[in-house]
Length: 214
Length: 214
DNA sequence: TAGATTGTTAATCGATTAACAATC
DNA sequence: TAGATTGTTAATCGATTAACAATC
Image 1 (cartoon, rainbow over the protein chains, first blue to last red):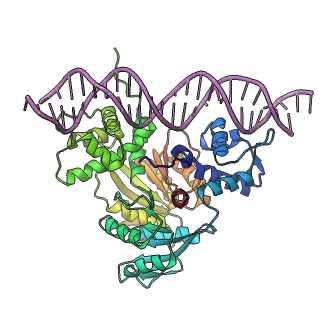
Image 2: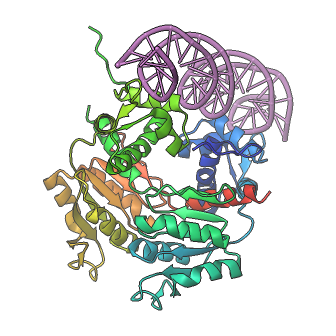
């Protein structure tokens, strides 16, 4: 679980960054121009000193009296996370979850993550349109990834296919995998992996409910 | 008398527990009876001493030579997380994601989380069968939750409805909410909340890809 | 037995927080 | 100005890891 991020952000800091970013987007939408570290921290349950440290770690600095310029802070975080470019993205496995994510990500007006293709093995699904994209046969995936230099694969195939498919994705040169299966993918370190682990949330909820009941 | 008052699991420890549990289930399926802390840790990228500490914190102890009895370890973790009982669960919002999760959770042969109802506002969806459950109108949700003492609500409504709906859920007495919306729910501390935050994974992937490219 | 593995202590490492002079 | 807010240092807190006697 220990990731080597030597010159980069520490893991707890990295985990907070999307959270800051999201909150800053909301504040900006709200018409705010500046926000103090204490105000920003309050939203996320984080102390003000922590916020200042985190923002300083990506090169965002505030002003006395005013706090942080929201646009500047957004810019700094986006730059640190590598969000100042586009990433092409494909969804692999168009079952219920794949469909949901296709709509979720396909609909997003984001400039950052670009859904470009859907793949599935099932002949009943292939050729159908989902979220505006025609589903392609899985066997074309490797070539597509290679030819287009695909950045990200969202992996939503059944557990028993996950290992094999992810090997194919890596072989084809995908740069990152967002893994929604329950399989632990053991991949070369050059490939970035994020695990969604949807079922773990229920376990943690059970714990939360249990301790509150005492 | 000094009772061993369980001060609860620390957050990093709690986060690892579902991971251990899942790995132990796999090992058990595999026919193993014992596993050493170093072997278990290897699967998750965790040091052996850490594993022993974590397991000790839930009352699971190993034997020299043999390591940990897998059944005992599972039992201990399940007990610590509150998984030795059933939780009733409803899905609120039967869009694409709600459908996906209905199938995901509904299909699970688990003894622990029991999907018992689906709710939606859309009159085109209400009455339809999804994952074997008839979708009920949202306005019946509060009564259903109260009457059945529902444990967990899986919240998959659009962002702009999330706040209002979650307030209703809390008012009706739900014990925990698994929040798949991007809204930060501000709820009374008596209610357990887990946030899925599906979009954060993409941000972290982008970062992972970026640092690897350097 | 020989030696793999444990539980636990102590050392280390790293993250969070408190405190405060500097700022505008 | 008065005082809200900063960046940063030092103190604290907590988690991880190394080490090792005890175990069977």
